[in-house]
Length: 168
Image 1 (cartoon, rainbow, N blue to C red):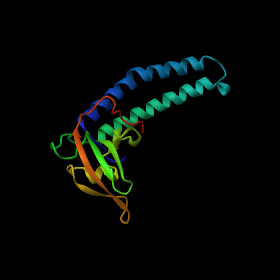
Image 2: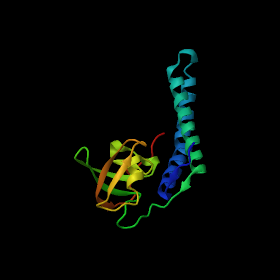
Image 3: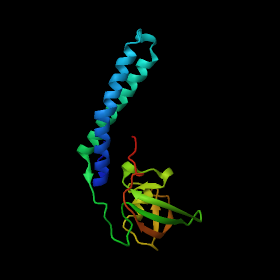
Image 4: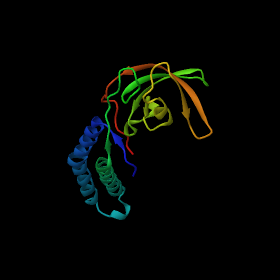
């Protein structure tokens, strides 16, 4: 597992999810397995297998989150007022497509491009991090391919409840 860069807010969200999964979800999953097992013949008991699957998924998620916390590198989410940083909302102009898009720059554990959140580890995130409004930046996709974007605006925003952590 690669070392994740996490902010203090990310760590708090992970710890809250771990607490919920260990104290509530785990008990519910164990009870569901117990109830399903009492229904008799396990060879054709779909409820039993579904309950076991859900219990195993929860335990797997707990191990994943614990390992992530153990190996994480804590980074600051503070940035200069006029520079692109973590939790900033940026307006980007894509020259090739003649389109303007708005994204929030987040850590990789909260990245979701379909929801307008791009990771600092993504090609666009790496390219714009630390730049200022008005800068024309090359986004490298590979050694031979890339495109240009212009940073139109930077809005200093904060971590919100909507910035959930990814499932896997």
